[in-house]
Image (cartoon, rainbow, N blue to C red; front, top):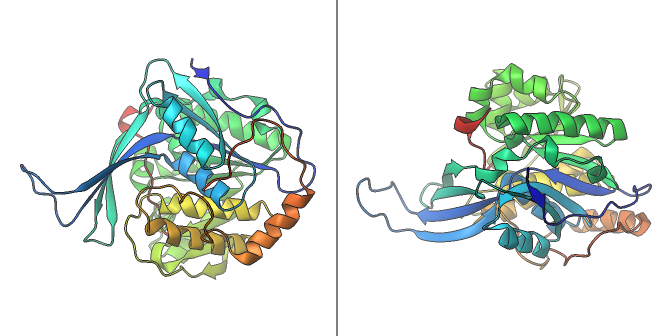
Length: 363
């Protein structure tokens, strides 16, 4: 068991507007090392190293808040040594955290090796720590009060407690009529979990947001568009991130929209897929169609790859959602009742760049 240190007081259910976004997933500490060229084995490699807040679930929540979603909530599990820092960073990004403090495990830590000479591609060394221990005992039906959409980090599927939490959360959301989205998280971890096991675990999910590699792995098809179309026969809506080729929107076995990428000069691709997901969900909550939401996701992904780390810049600064999306959000927000709970400061595609999960410890 763990103790909760913060979180939204149960607000009234949103009867108008899009409602809140609840994200359930990982909160970790990223150690980002940017180097150029191959690592020098057995000796030193010069690098620029920064310690940053991260985690796929936390990143999605922060990008959704940055993209204008007025009520973003996050359920995660951390160690006592870093809870204050992570809570402060989430609040500063406009996210209302509900962090469970694990009495035994430390906060998850991910070392991100970013090769600045190879299109900013990254390699992760992962210790999931407390995030892997998030489970159904951390769930409460009250978490869905006022929620318009529930998003689950796919890293939850790589531990026994996480899988139990996914089943509990999906059942609760379906009983309340709350649509559920999930990001598969990692092609490498999916190989160990198994395709059919994954598909059984995501039964009841309304929106699947895989990368191209994940979609191809889940279908056995080499073509990204064919894979997205095939997945949409099993999940109602599939939005497949295609990296530099943008995104695909598929429903009912067909690709309905091909959304081009936004040009960008990559510095660090860590969290680019999370940025896409956060902006996509924030836009979907305004009532926008999936194609328009995917366009916003691609804009966020482009912004993300030009930054170091997985989180958005602080403040708006004209880098957030497009004017049309902002107008739609303003119209929805003007209709939505204010949710209860503590007030927080307003916060500051690309293919996936995530940080969390540890299959070696999966149950």
